[in-house]
Amino acid sequence: EDKVVQSPLSLVVHEGDTVTLNCSYEVTNFRSLLWYKQEKKAPTFLFMLTSSGIEKKSGRLSSILDKKELFSILNITATQTGDSAVYLCAVRGSGGSNYKLTFGKGTLLTVNP
Amino acid sequence: GAGVSQSPSNKVTEKGKDVELRCDPISGHTALYWYRQSLGQGLEFLIYFQGNSAPDKSGLPSDRFSAERTGGSVSTLTIQRTQQEDSAVYLCASSFGQLNTEAFFGQGTRLTVV
Image (cartoon, rainbow over all chains, first blue to last red; front, side):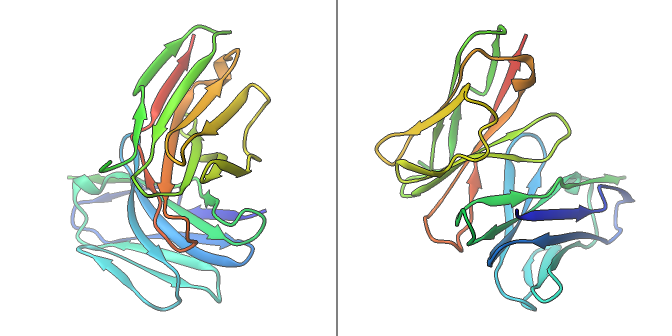
């Protein structure tokens, strides 16, 4: 069964700090890893990673994947209060259910002013 | 449509009643997923559709839960004889059918069983 573990479960920082969120996984025939930001109900898509070592970047957010060590990190630099959210990591494999996204429990990030 | 649309946004129902939750995926997306998120919990997979067929129903928690998809578009998740433990946010997502494509979520339906 596919498995995703995120750490830390929660994190409190001050505005301007840099944070690193972790996601490790076990999946049959890895296909892709996705990061989402969830503020209220709907998770908002951030990044999809398929290849090791290639950094995806969007503004102050960046993410990288290590397929050998089976993990990904999400970095947020110069954090703002608007970054406060739950960050979800999901993986997609091509095992029994080719398209199923398996999610971790998320990291709750709180950015204080 | 521009995004994944779910209705209703909120639903309060009495224990024992049946409810139907609707998901309208992004136009052209052949893959559709239903997830459930209980308070403070992660996303729990329920069912996945490719076109109108559901190759993976492994996440449906009991036979009170069923889902269908017609015309390769709109999907309905039905919960019969609702129980209080069914209270959660039900999220729908859609993507193109290929393996390495992004999945986008709707705003969810918050179901409260009283």
